[in-house]
Amino acid sequence: MTVRGYVSCIFADPYDGPTAPSAVLRCVRALLDMGCYEVSLGDTLGVGSPANVRQLLHYLVENGIPLDQLAGHFHDTYGTAVANAWEAYRCGLRTFDSSVAGLGGCPFAPGAKGNVASEDLIYMFHNAGVETGIDLLKLVETGAWISNRLAKANSSRAGTALAVKHRINAPHRTSAENGQPLSWAIFQDTEGLQLYRSGANLKIILNRPKNGNALTASMLSSLTQTIIEASKDSSISRIAIMGNGKYFCTGMDLGKDSTPVGQGGSSSDSQFDRLTNLFEAIDQSPKVTIACLNGPAFGGGVGLAFACDIRISTKQTTVTLSEVKLGICAATISKYVIREWGVPFAREAMLSARTITAEELKSRGLLSEISEDQNRLTVLLDQLLSRLRVASPNASRMSKELVRLAWAHSGGEKQAAGIRELFAAMMREDADGAHGVREFQRGKKVDWDAYILQQSKAKL
View 1 (cartoon, one colour):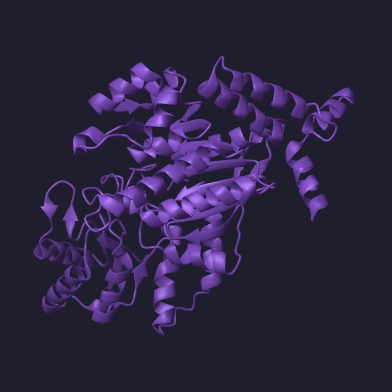
View 2 (tube, one colour):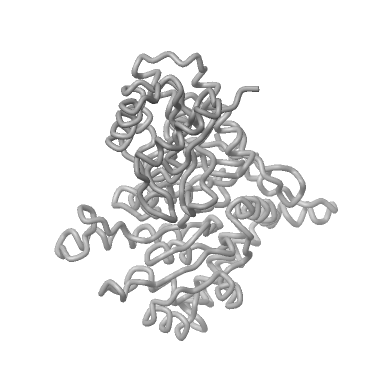
């Protein structure tokens, strides 16, 4: 029987900090002496850099460890796994561990990412002229499939890009309420955003997990444009927004070279317009909008969630109106937070900047449902989307308008006039109501998604 050895935490561990090269040497030598045919060097926390890799390998070789008995195992927590693998290859390593779609993590290092994505590794080697014997597109298809089966975001950059480029749309299936799975297909992957479709549903993934899905200027513009275009698309009935990784959204990007805070003038005006346009696009969309909070939200991320019609979250989700800690206020999001939370609670949350749990939000009626974890959250979203098929998109739009009239013009003439207009619209011969009532009289339930799709095709 052949045995392969593995040394974990070659650069650092979560208990003792940095790992001395001599400690790695001692473990490698002991494993080889035991008869292991190969020893994998594992940067389990994903904290290493190419310089660390080069230094360690040179040290091991200088102390008599043959490179052909070593392998590289680099996690991608800080985005250096591919670079580390390339440096190891240049130093002489020829065997590497990897994970399809970058799946995995580290049980004793919370937040650590999985092993380097196989797709990213193979893409790099092939572009460098290094033959691996692996069919990259088949690998990409496999990564898309397993990510969808596990209801997890695909962590491979190359895999996601190639899936879009080559139209490799492995269905993302999770059990919906009626027992039939939903199928999600990615159709656009831009900087910071991934877009998926499943029938009449659009799912927008905020995709800057290493930066807490903080909203850059380009993300704000792209997200706004996506919402506006979807709002005009008659084939779309529902829009869901969720984040990739640990956070839902940490608000404005406050990076040193990217934040407009403290600059004033046109920079301030531009950021105000970008934020206002985004929240208004969501708020005024005729589609049903759903915030799917996969983790904590801060500042503008809270506004993003509460501009939506419905919210679901994981049990671990928290929201924090943290602006006052930074000397700023919840300006552009206040309209939506105060409307949804009510004046007393919103005031207290803004002034205290305290962390508010999912349980408290649920108890206040601000969350529709809570899931145990992120995997179950995706299932919960699909179940919610399936239940919403019972609602006519146009009736949903009118219902949203009734709520808007009550909020902005309660008891006034504008509310009365608006209600009258909506009543007249729903009673028209060509309105959704005419079809819905006919089907009711026939004893049939309406599949509004199928009906709207048929209507859309008829207009082409």
